[in-house]
Image (cartoon, one colour):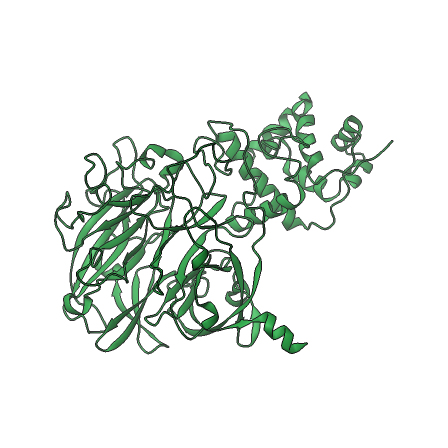
Length: 589
């Protein structure tokens, strides 16, 4: 009898056909689906690793929507016993030769023989099945079984550049928990004062620190003592979200923060419809320091804005002032706030795909004004939708699933960068355009997204597509999971970084860059990966932090020098050099 080798998982999915066509398997199907003992890995890094393995071994023959070269995988993990699948992937020939009835029936029926995949260990098989399970469930729950889904939207791998960042540890922030992440540090910001530069960093669990002598930190503000309703659990970016100092802080003492409180803690300025329950509220607060020059805050605060959220995820992200705006210019003293969809994009897309709602937007307000509906802030008269009666006038741009970070190129181009965290396919770097529609929940990257179809898939753009602002750099989930927005390098100490926008991936801790000059609307800039060196040794951030999930963030000091920091160990690192590894190799030769 001839034997033909198939790609990994062909017989797994053929087993689905066998099980669902044999009456004796019904009880096994039910137990696979309903038994509490049956579980699949669900954490994002394991599932993503499973996708990498799937794309490597299986994607050419299989998808989750239709029979291709191999059978449709949709539903296999809820129809076939998991232990049997694990054993069959590990060593199909052994199961056939041992007399396993199901394996022998498959071999007899299809005359196909899958070899033992000894190169895959048990953890890799678990990750593959975790990925298949997640995609299968997405397909099962979708209201629209749309064909043509793309599993690997950016097939080209990100090249590793011949550049190696040299890191120096500045300090470790005080631990705010005993388990990883030890400190949920989230943003670094420098301000200029008559005393010289002041450097601030904050922990999502509630404390804003001032770095006092470049090696120690001192608590400047503690949300836990100021707001009894302050919450920072269950995580997902909740807590003390972001902070920004007014450009005239030394004169007016004004500081701005965002934080989370329980649902219904107070009436929301932007409530959800009555039919939708809020899970929490995001709040924007103005603080007025009695003495802006002191090392600890004392003063008063007032609430500016409160917004209901459908879930705990994708809330307020960056708040920032345009550092390029000068006194007398239209943008001076105006506060930008990046706001995600709050989880509404998949469940209530009508809250997102419109100028008449505030979610998925970057808003732009005058914190010193009072012409808003609640009278607590102003709405600039040059905001793009100010003359549209039904639009939310605070909105400056919209269509972001989770507008993670906002920054400006301080070296001459003036480009505004807005990073956007994707659903399960594409991570984006965008250029800010007033009035722009960035597509969510109808677009993800330069691809179509359908909120009614499988949320793990994207689709080709329709013909004659128009009306959306697309990213200028993107990468897919073979390379990372969630973008950590960054900065165009603006310093002088590391000349090899000149002209580069540095960003990365939050959980995996990869560091990327694109050339600022190549980041133009209507085209995709090449993304490159940087390597790192610490204490004379080439390493990577998972190794350096001794954590599988790094939780990477970036910051600049007043001189434009680059820092990175990680929640995994609560450490702040400065980039003190960048080495050309190709030149080093020539020297070694």
